[in-house]
Image 1 (cartoon, rainbow, N blue to C red):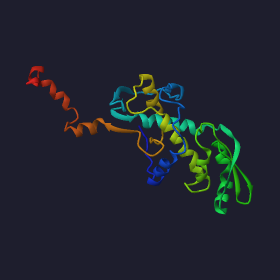
Image 2: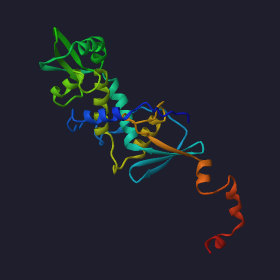
Image 3: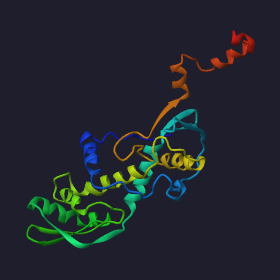
Image 4: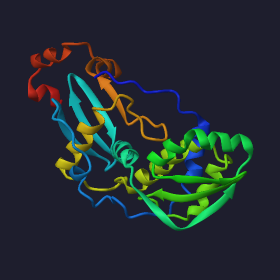
Length: 239
């Protein structure tokens, strides 16, 4: 399975994600009780699902390779991709006024359409004065907390929606200790196997993989050595 893990996620990005968690309160949107099949529409694939390990990992065999999938990271990434594609917004009853420096004003002008596509609408009133008029439909926090991002004090504005959606995706994804059905497991497995960059939104790899050859080396076994076991009887192996 050809997948790459991008190394572009920096420690600064992870710290930025952590700071964005304060934007949203705990949300019940798409909780772990929501059927995964309603969120994810995967294609069928040739693999064998072996089961759940420690209520954290999904074990999958495919083409002489064992995949150990972090079910939370996988579900989080799939939810993130879905949320990021949503363009719905909700209008604020009273627009929120804010001011920015000239350099940031130019930046906002250049990215207004991009922000609008993410559900964030801003309006230039005059000089350094701006208004925040809409926020993403899934947003349930205090709109005032969006202003530091728009004012350039917490990273570029075009990063805002990415990290906010990652926060929602994380809080709504299945958690360690959750029991999931085989159908839910298959939805996650098939979904993450379609990813080109198999990492969760804040940079962690979604799975580890071990080829048959690698596992053999780990236990000191040579390929084909299992055939030699046949020369021993069952009783002999028990002694």
